[in-house]
Amino acid sequence: MKSVVHILAVIFCFTLWSNTVSATHIMGGEITWECAGNGDYIFQLHFYRDCNGFEVNTNAENLRVWNHPTVSSISLPFQERIDISPTCTPVGGASQITCGTGAQAGSGPGAVEKVIYRSEPINLSGIPPEEGWVFTYENFSRSGNLSNIQSPLTYGMSIRAIMYAAPDAESGTCVDNSPVFLQDPYVVSCTGEPYSYNPHGVDPDRDSLVFRWAEPLNDFIGEEYNPPIFPEVVPFETGYSFDNPTPDQSFNANNVPAALDAVTGAFTFTSFTQGDFATKIQLDAYRLGHKIATIEREIQLVVLSCSGDNNPPSITPPFAGGTSFEIEVLAGEEVAFDFVTEDTDLLQDGSPQSVTISASGLAYGSGFTDPNDGCHVLPCATLSQTLPITGTSTAATRFEWQTSCDHLLDATGNALDQMQYLFVFKVEDDFCSVPQVRYETVTVTLVNSDVLPAPEISC
Image (tube, rainbow, N blue to C red; front, side, top):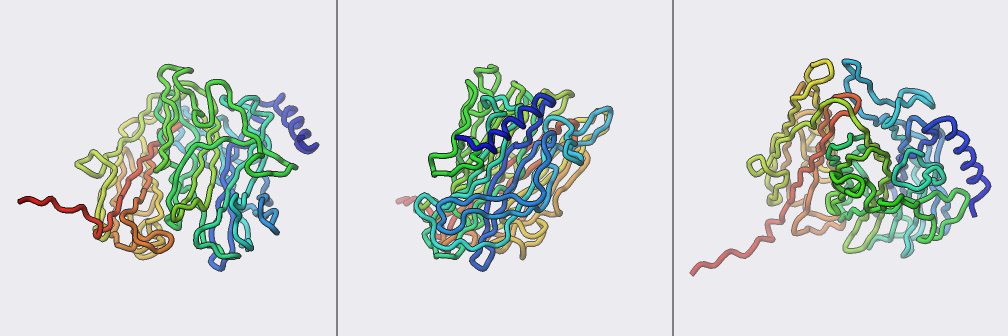
């Protein structure tokens, strides 16, 4: 049975809903952890907030801990808040979507803020049991604008992360960093435009990763969690499901259903149907065949009917004569290419658009320019300039990476036959209110030179 606190929260939310379309604020979140260097863990919560709703807690949030013998909660003090609404150049009467300032400063659909909470170092004694140590964050309620969730105002949200025993686990010692997402959520897009996004999930320890769809969960504020039975799954509207969260052809013959690449994490769909859609992906990390970590990211996507004629920037593939974003090389060889993007569309006042390049990847050096510092394994990959790079109608940068055999070592120090490195580039124009955004994933597969195919024998 729901607690009195939760019931009162529902009543309070409905009271506010009668006065405003967007009285709620939860759009998603994720929980991650990292090794502090002395055996302790540091936990981090990213909370994604609809700026048109309630203000957020700027003191601290708590993670609840399950299956651990002594630790039941972890305090995460507030760190910072970042407006991740679409950025553009408002000219010719066009307006910009922004969070602004203050509790009710959102400027309409798509105004989103990332709020970061971070714990002090904490020691977790023991080794996780078979079902893992489970970390949860709960909040109430979801946005009433959601199109794919039944009665969304009556449901909250739970975000989980699970730490399992690693093959090299030692009691009271941090031996594994969780996977992390390097790219912020891409929330706002236009009807009829292909949505293509890569959250760039990576593992700092170079463990193997698998992406999959996950079920959005209700909150369980004031209640106990009995993994994996509770919390309850949030029900979807007819025509939607957790692994089909955006409109398919049953809503419009031109829609392209959502697809998630289990290896790269790339997420695509095309919707001619306007609305807000709850989506959730799960990222599992494996070491020597054992699952050792699970993190989740839930995010509410906003598909708007946009005005104006605007196309996404073009990108020239760097390999195979301008036809591919993938390359395979022997470890020890250098990888170098020019990354070039162009956008010849105009802003509302007839002036040229600006195009901006940003990027993510664990192998980059400090500031994207230092080959000798900032990455986990030297030498680091570099770009010719510190990011972001913005140009009028076109922008470009030079990628260089001197690979080595050390880049083939896994989390336990063993050399693999091959290892794949992903470098995600984000390119966006500055058209208002919703700029066109494009993500491309450059895949570099390093191959161990000791593992070569047998030569053909010709007699």
